[in-house]
Amino acid sequence: MRPSRVFEWNNWVPKKVAIVAWRSEMERLPTKCALSIRNIPVQNQRCMLCSEYDETSEHLFVSCHFAQTIWQNIAGWCRMPPIIAFDVKDLLELHGFSTGSKKKKKAINAIVLVTFGASEG
Ligand SMILES: [Zn+2]
Image (cartoon, rainbow, N blue to C red; front, side, top):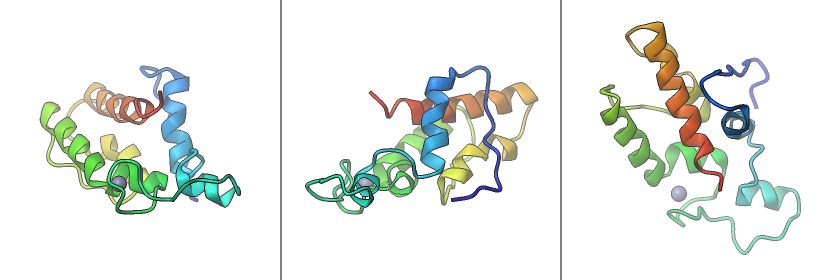
């Protein structure tokens, strides 16, 4: 939990989409680990994509190799250098470190938020 950071909303992305990233940063998504902490029975806590590691938001969006492939593809499409992220915060702050116009940074942030949002549904 990082209460020090203020979530940056982006008016190019609907709030209901961006909220997934916001909840993910706080580990407030119903991942298997989160459910099990709340005593909701889950078959196992393994990641539904790789079944190798525990399913936390951090794993699902950052360290899972499926997630990493998605981020690297996005970097390629956006002609950005490879994305190096150690936690959800790194992804949400990615646009701040990219080069280019304010508009490009906002677009990168929008793409990141939409990618998180795409995990729902
Ligand atoms: Zn995984």
